[in-house]
Image (cartoon, rainbow, N blue to C red; front, side):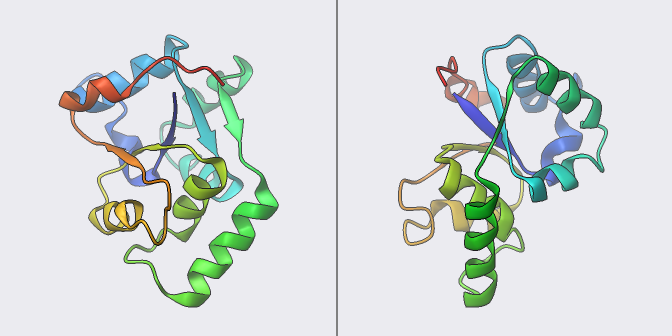
Length: 140
């Protein structure tokens, strides 16, 4: 199982936050991988999660989505104004990578990710420790 981390949730990736601690531990123990695009990385690198990303990348636990496809879809979402959120790059990353799990607390982004017209395959949203069942072994 892979996960996309929205920058607005990166500050939750610490021992004090039950959900964030689960995601962080899962990634660091090598059970999951982080899926990113260049836009997503730019946002995440502005957070305290930057060093963790670099460590995950060195351990080959970061998957990069097709940048050209992400950019094209991001631009289409931006042009059509069909999204509730201001995160067309995250939605594009979900669709292009086919990653079906996002760690976010952004309610408008939740709406976009649950909208089958936007994300045809659907997407799980991790935001609480009770969602731990969503963190399975990564086979990619």
